[in-house]
Length: 73
Ligand SMILES: [Zn+2]
Image 1: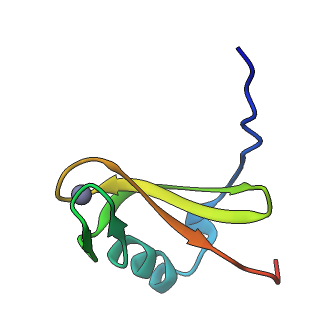
Image 2: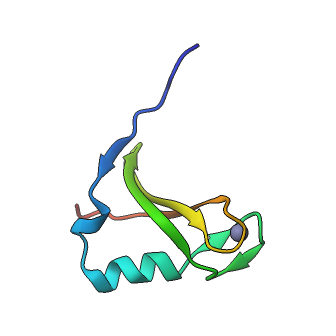
């Protein structure tokens, strides 16, 4: 088994409260096929130069991801 998981976990809670709330509210759930259902238990990490905020859909409990393309880190 090989792991190509190069995730670097970042501190989501270091963000502004407002920003955190926006991430938690503005979601897209593939399972529900719906936007802005919200998520909880956020985890932020960096993978291949992209920041992801991963959480759990408030409606169905599946993992949801928000991808950030932030050039200025
Ligand atoms: Zn969902």
